[in-house]
Length: 78
Image 1 (cartoon, rainbow, N blue to C red):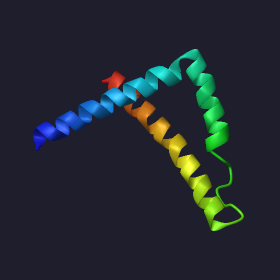
Image 2 (image 1 turned 30 degrees about the vertical axis):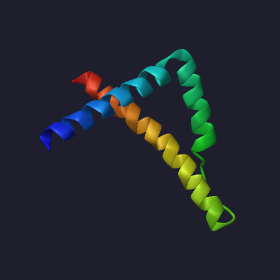
Image 3 (image 1 turned 90 degrees about the vertical axis):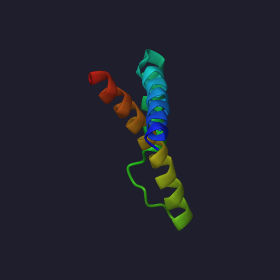
């Protein structure tokens, strides 16, 4: 069980490093800015419940990217 957890943590760390390397490059920073504009709307509520769910899903995708980058950054500081 502990071995499985360590394996999952290693996989997560590797994935986070890939995201970090990608999105901290000069081109990656520009892409991340564009993704933030596109995927992180100021207002989540849409005209319909489906529109709202769509907006929340887009926002969640952007937050996922940021969380992985933060995870990698925290690992680099240790």
